[in-house]
Image 1 (cartoon, rainbow, N blue to C red):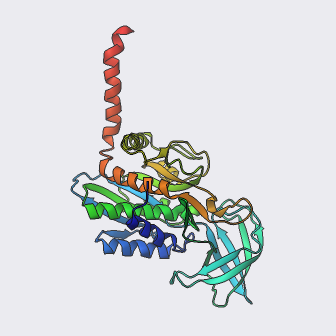
Image 2 (tube, one colour; image 1 turned 90 degrees about the horizontal axis):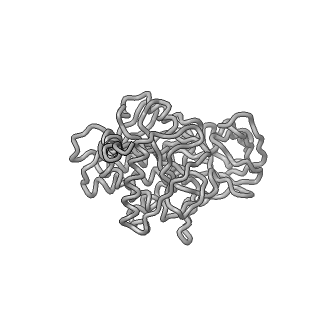
Image 3 (tube, rainbow, N blue to C red; image 1 turned 45 degrees about the vertical axis):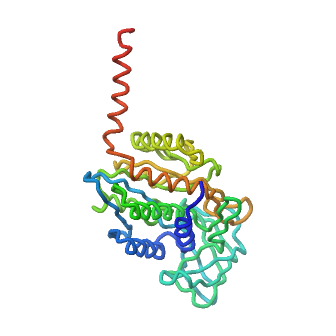
Length: 360
């Protein structure tokens, strides 16, 4: 499935934004401006998560929440002295020698003003969420509190392979925005909230905050949008769980029903249903917090920029992303009341029982 030009432009702009855990300001400002341009309500909770709402024509109060996190693993500048900086890596980082890797250093004010840096040494540290520290030679002007990303392309498209620094999870931020854009332009009957969370890569911190705040409706059906290392070009993944837990089975059942129906209508609509037993996503946090949550995942290569021998851009199949965006619009307009899912399955089982019980 090809990417529509309007969606491609949104994707290109979002992928160009620098980000890191606790340094999501550039992505957040883009989301807020996007909402203002389309007259969509946008709220920020006390933890910095954003909620962009589209509600037209449906009186029901149970929204579909499309959730994507705004961060990607990166470095935080802890100290600077004599042209050298000590950097702490936030997130699960590449388990390879980073000596000599070029970086781009940003502040939280200007997304286009980057200073150069080069890692001269790195050390592993105990703990899953901060696996390494690095020392880097930095340009003048780098300050404590700045953040750094790997110096990688933000857009390179070759034979459907889209290379970018931070598909995880900016490609899903863009997918959510494209869905809201399409709903608003077409004035579809739907109740959809785009939830853009912070600091997923260091332990689902923003998502936990969302469950502590009253901006996230208690009865919302949350569809967590993620990226995971698995084979591309077979379609996006309807994800029923992760390394930590399985997700809400009735919500996942409805996603599978909708995906099956769509695949029967379109030959270029591809999806897959493996159960990735790697990584943990925000959906597990929501399930643990007694929310209705399931997930959709984009397959990608070079997860968290781990190449086979060096740091590399992440890679997705552009057709997988286009199918996902198409499906998010289907979900927004066709998901239906959550309580109807279990009821329909129960009715089917009741019919089978009434038909065959006499044979027992």
